[in-house]
Amino acid sequence: MADHADIPTSMCPICGYVMDAATVADGGPPVVPKDGDMSVCLKCGTILIFVDGIHLRLATPDEVVACPDAAEVSEQVRRYVRSLPRKPGERGQSSGRA
Image (cartoon, rainbow, N blue to C red):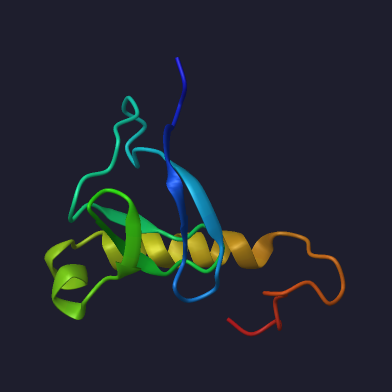
């Protein structure tokens, strides 16, 4: 059984990271996202919302506030991404600032 659900290719509106799969944050079985489901970009940590289960858009401040764990999850992703080794000149390279 796959650990993710395949989704149509969608890009993060902030960094352009291409996403084609979705996983459930709590490790549950994969489900296809539906309209209004929340996601986090694995490259920049931006909180996103699925539209029609296909496209991603930025979450509004009200949507982030409505999900108490969203900001913490986003920050965890950002810390993880900054910790990854990058090739010199690679887009998104850590500047060493937190």
